[in-house]
Length: 491
Image (cartoon, rainbow, N blue to C red; front, side, top):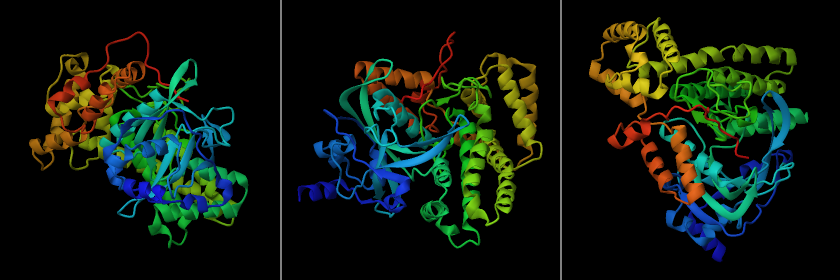
């Protein structure tokens, strides 16, 4: 009786549709209890959107749910199986430190995965301990919230709890568990897993499930599996273009980190670019630059090719014809991506209409920015407010010539200068989660137990297009350093 009361007060309303797929796609597993969980941060915005009661979520019983010490009524924890190309190499994988505890049905009828990340060992953990450290979990919370505020599709974080236990990496670190919210955790790698199993029936069951969950409008199409490929391509073209427009570098674009829903997932070694550089890499394990900023669109289509390969038995009974169908559609990705990217870059430059030479104008600016090592975000801010700094970029003859061309281009549209500036204000963020600011917040939280720095950072990141006075200090690039910034997977 008490359990039912707690569920009603909190607002959990679980369904478990993924658990109704063939059993090869998951293993039902319980989270491993922890010693003394403590709630560190709770996301009011996410809780409200899920139909949850913020006050009840802070109770001892709810903290036990976030920690994996208790399973709410209606939840059915499971670890998902999937595969993936990791840095180009195929591996069979799965949730090694995460559990899908259920799917929350919101008051509006929407469905979201609720996942515990760092909740202990699973059958897919291999030699891992299934745990997570506090720093990486807070990092995911910060970056995913920043991405959401920037208008980029992303998983979000509902809560972070500490476990009262240490985990051993290079040193002993405080353990934590993050509650992640996603439209789903179906990945390209999930389809690769189904295809590798050799069961067309299981592959079809997964594809039908993904279509029903994410693209119900295509269920009646003549070839819904081709339509599925087209829908996923479109979402990924749009998503990666949005990454490029704000200088976001994912860092580990393995096929198991590409969702069918088109949401950004897995914020391990990600970073935001300060100095504009197409070759920028921050991940300590990306030694060859496979996932560099400028490579992200190309990796996107490479991953989609792996997705298309997994769908071949569903695209056509003749595999040669299926491969041709897939290739014909994949060849459209470049144009899809470029259309999204160009549309976004036009807004960043205050352009309402389209002209043939717009791409040339944009690429000319980027080349000048690269030559003079200009800050990506702040250069567009300077253009927005016509406040050119005294630096090598703005003092160069190349920029002067480019600026003249840009002004001439602006004059050839009907909209006023003030309308163009407003368009730029709406699409050039005043603030991004600068790497040095994120590290500052994480150090204060993990090393000193001071969460105030992180809370203040989250507050200014929550409305990146406000262009408010308090955001200005957070727009400052890091001081020059002889040591390049490096990120780590956090496993």
